[in-house]
Length: 331
Image (cartoon, rainbow, N blue to C red; front, side, top):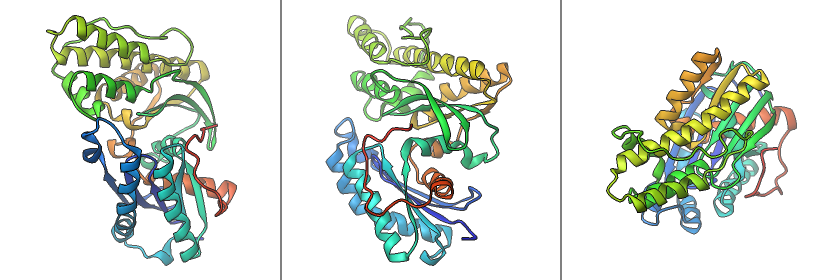
């Protein structure tokens, strides 16, 4: 295998994505078909609806990724697909498609951990990032603080004990009547608001674990008791509390582990206030900051392809009788 071209497939939740990436992490194509509008009417992702949409979209998305990359099936060296964690029905669409292509094309298949793929989204645009790193992985389903000691070897320093941070954003936005998804709309609303409400900073001085359920409840109770408060101020104050908790723990972890850099990944990594604060902390502490482009923060297949190739070189292909694991852990 000389070229190391990997076709990556991502269907863990409500994005149908395919990408072709070289062994040097050059992204030749990255196609993402989002189902946000489809699920917005329900206020969140409906698993059955997501699965049916993936069935309709998976073939044209893969075809478009190959066309945009300017490659044919014979040029592909590896087929990689997210095999967990995620919605089991959604995962099975991508895994089944990848294994079918593997059989038809005569190419190896590898299953990729969705969380590990988010860790490696940092390397898509900066492949020479110096290790060790602290990675803050924040999304609608996960909030994890990871020490990346060397490639494919890392340890979890802390994680949420209840709601993921993206889940808290969605629930606060729903209560404020802002619609779904909550992250982008709260981020935008906060830009015109004032950080003048003192919401709690849960567990900010207690190790590396997180808790956002209490903060979410505090925001809802405050709005119930103070209905005249502008939503802009609620959004700005809530977001400031979230960002302070996330960044203070990431900063502490970097200092205590001797990390050379600080990265963020996952859908919430697209948040403008979080991105700004990460840069400020790294500047003050002499750390190398890396904040992926917003296209690589949210679910995409380029990160799956890049991670799949790296895993394939170390571990070899996955068995074709391996399935999807909706509860797959990072370590």
